[in-house]
Length: 377
Ligand code: GAL
Ligand code: CA
Image 1 (tube, rainbow, N blue to C red):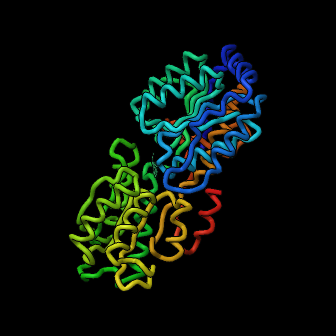
Image 2 (cartoon, rainbow, N blue to C red):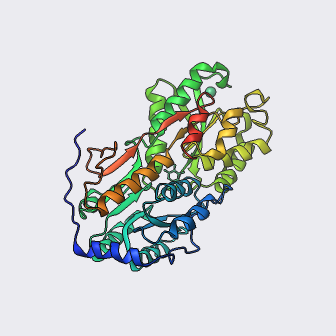
Image 3 (tube, helix red, strand yellow):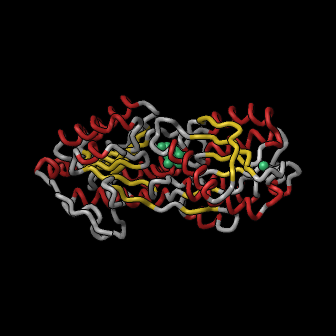
């Protein structure tokens, strides 16, 4: 793949911002550190304060759109970890509120941030964030997780880059293939013997660039693979465990054992679906259960791996939070040092004009659960 030639706009103001960062020792340890909503560890805040005391390092103004989002919280932690010895960083929680996140970016810039890296609350706010970085002296800006798909926005700022996961299929083609594999290996999964998969489809936040494509690609991969589907119900669970559980509660009581597959656009929702059907007596003994419905998610979160081991969840598609965090930090470092964004790294930009480094998705089942665990250490 051809690496992008980048025009580096390292200006005096940016150098000044780096200097300002040097002077602001310790005052970056705000209380808004990223913590994972549904999961339990508090590693991120400890790591944050450790990094924040290192006043000689430049400041990375980083933020996730919500700390209640499991996967985003893991990327936040990965950024904190990768920043050790490189940046002072405090990963802000945008609390699903765009004005809160914009204020956090203003604060980071006022504190002398040398670069900004955000998972934006609302992708339509990208131009506002770009303007802030431009006004602050062309600060490097890295969007991660929620891809800015409007090319005119991406092209409007030379110092803008993105870090996401691979490709136009948003992991759903892998998910679809896993369903096909399961279907051919488990003839009993066709409970009514009609050759079709009676499925439930729990989708992500409709405002998110990945939601509709994930839903479309999982279905087209299955039908292109020669298996017909019948979607019993589909609706958004907003990436969220509790919301997915609520939807599933209604559907499991309506359809029960007629459901042959539960497809979820992420693992947080797969966990919600599992809670719901377990309460209704399904999947309680994993694959040994009397009543079983395969569930599949995306992300391969640490909190689902035990359920994958037991078969309560059939599988997931890993998004590599750790490598995404490393890529974000490596790029930000290069950019503030006036280098090409990917110098000295093995990452490549996608050639589709997105200016995105995409970290590959990977199928995760009971066979390779341990590899997934490593990506979220
Ligand atoms: C997706 C991820 C979801 C959620 C979403 C939020 O990539 O699979 O779990 O984190 O991003 O932007
Ligand atoms: Ca069937």
